[in-house]
Length: 81
Image 1 (cartoon, one colour):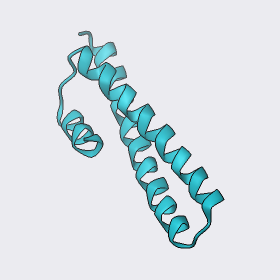
Image 2: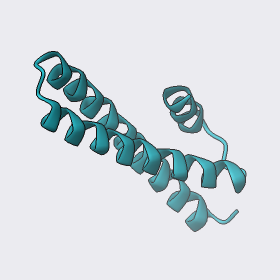
Image 3: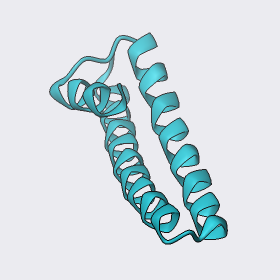
Image 4: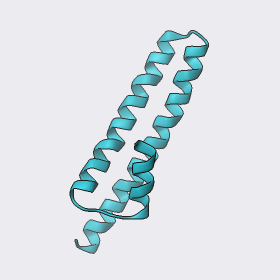
């Protein structure tokens, strides 16, 4: 893998990590809204969670399939799974 390609992969890893962190914040919002019995806001937060988690999982799958390995990949895998 060329340096340029490797750099792009690391940028994608960072994006996936940001996305999964955003998803975690949305999950906390979802749980809070469920406790407050606010079903509409809870549903919105749940959809946001699913979108961002799915986006991060997709990036992770692509990076795994092309053979990218690093500590950030391990961190991403631990958070997702």
